Image (tube, rainbow, N blue to C red):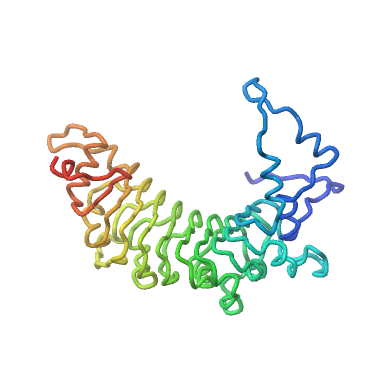
Length: 338
């Protein structure tokens, strides 16, 4: 709305940001005393019935042993990498001695501004393999590639989630290039419309690009050159309607022959053309999800009678004899005969 606005009291106190270790201790090692302890002991009722907590104290004690933590979730905790002084017990230099065994780290929706901040944390986590950075807003990513590319902390990552970061194709290329050993990458909800300017790592075996703005399979054809080992490609909930961007110019292309699993559910497929072209575009395809496309809600037989979605899926199987599963259902020999 052109006249919308927000009003803040000048005397209002801001939520204070935290260093990585401050957030870690707040989440996993908070000591319950005074009011906090009283709140923790309040009776819990579900549908009028009193519920008893069993075993949570033991879990809390285990989590409080920070050096044993392996999976850590610090999303939405106002985390930043640095504080005003690195001499405190919460400085970067104390991360490795405090929590050296973290393998899975979620830093989504925090206050990081640069990739180097994240790299400085990862450098101090020698066992880190999975990193989630969803909904962080980094600036000048493309301009910092050279200084970050050799960072050991990011280089050890094998799985990463970069959803909701509003990355351009070039920024996604920069972020992923800092993880030369990455195998599984998610870059959903980034408003991506094409990968023409984005070379993803050659080590990728699984790529999730849900909820972007792709309109054709040709939008991701660069994967054939950049990611020849790709096995799983998730394009769910895009706007894909066809194989080619321009139906008048249909220069053939092939996605990586290693791809066996593709998700095209919740797109805008309205004709059989893209399905007929899948064997030549994705020759290794064995597992397909294609439910919830307009094609299957408006099917009609040759004599004009309406057909069900189930009929449409049977026709899909007939057109793609190499499939082993469709929409998670195994395709048996008997089903193929029908």
